[in-house]
Length: 352
Image (cartoon, rainbow, N blue to C red; front, side, top):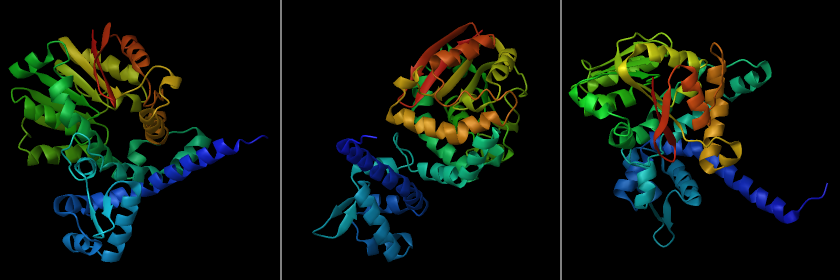
């Protein structure tokens, strides 16, 4: 076998960078959980001792953590003062939960993926699935916080207005079902924006429904946003004006069955909104940084979840618009169009 030394060295450089990034996923989680990023963004520049004092942590650990963050380019280091700080752009990514680019929650998701790796490796051999009910608990809160960033800055502002006539219905008073609602992030964002409407969140995971109910109560939305344990094929029909799926249809074992049920629950001229991870229709067009992230998540979370359910279609997180449209049409929706998009999401509108 002939080896090109230059290509080998280039590839090894890539591997060193990737291994460093993977190792730092745990440190991102530590910084997020202990408030290290927020304290540094608010009070920096700081020495390790000052940051440790501000966060109630130990200086020696903080010093090593800061060194790793500086080597990663996640924080800044001034050799003259021996102090660390964060640029505004770094703070937006790691220290501000309400930022449109906040990524601090990614540590919880990466931790869950690593914790559950033995289960996924076993599934590779057995061909069985690994359901959400079998996953590490930190996957649920990490997923909710990760998607909150996108939903908070796009759902009400862009996605709902992109649907034909939906905002007018919501302003007058509509019934909305949020299927696969998780912790209710999307449900409650809509409930806050449209006080004349009623929102119903459904999820098969009891722990997520409990979290959603608690969040609704704490935000004073319990009368207009209710949550119940139900699957996408069993949630009750109430002539909904809008049924939403946020980043979850591809996780379902039988998406055709789910959307067929949705069709029966809609009011006349009702709308189904499918929010899915952004993807082109061909593998070769998804070999990008975003595609890399979604294919990895799909291998470790989405595909096993689907294969643990009946049918087990396993669409995956990079299904693409053409495949999603095909699923919707098989389910009885005659009109399917791309209503909106972001670098991370496709938003499809489906109508009977």
